[in-house]
Image (tube, rainbow, N blue to C red; front, side, top):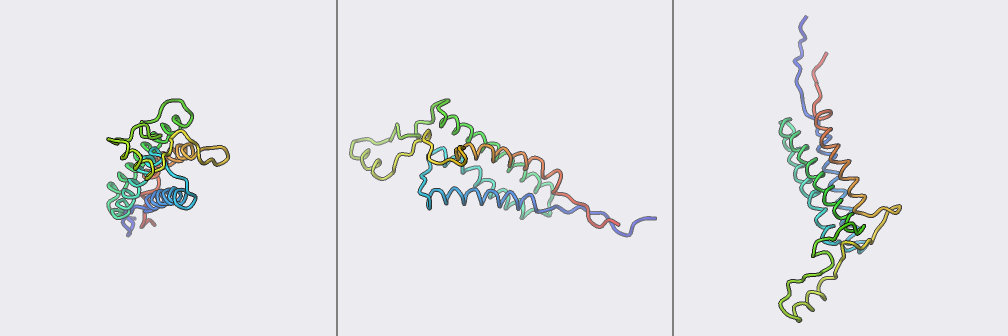
Length: 174
């Protein structure tokens, strides 16, 4: 006997919502550390935030397009790519902190772009120099870039696996 209910698949917003909340919380923590705890970020710390901004936008669009499962899933996969890029930036930053390699010239103020002494003095007084190889914060002996490295890897894996397993559920079954 045929079922009177048709089977249709509707996407679950949970992966997109989870990814959005993680990115927003991560950026919130970074801003808290910067503005409340007065931990000034170096240029690599600022670069590590860029994937989180991207993920925020992609997750919002994914949630808005939840009725189009293919697009919504694709955007979560792109969030995974953004987190993987973030893991790469974090790995580079860990290497700079551990002195495995040199950081970019902007880490530590080696080049200023000033054309004279007065301009250089103004730049130095306006902005404190934050070195990329200086460790200002640790959690259980682990630096913030190291925490971000492992966190970004975990989120990338989640974003690559979650759309396949959780974004589609079958409703209308007997």
